[in-house]
Image (cartoon, rainbow, N blue to C red; front, side, top):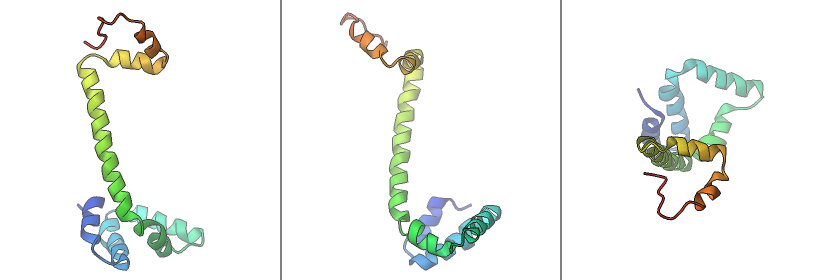
Length: 118
């Protein structure tokens, strides 16, 4: 099954009309109900879906995919931090600080030799 990124790697070198055709013919054929609802929605609004696809979606797709890839990397990075907190049994401290953001200021009052994250 083609994912959206697999589709894009195939379509990115094509002109926009071929990208739109490939999206409809090969990618969205796997989701016929979604495609039908999208097309009906545009038609109900008096809009041409191909114009919307051309002007609002495919014209920006390359930069949006780049941004999504960067965000995916950032999310993985942040999830790793959360997993490490859980492994080091720091999760309860984190939840407490989330409930009471000012608790950080209380930590400053701890003596310098106290390590709350061990």
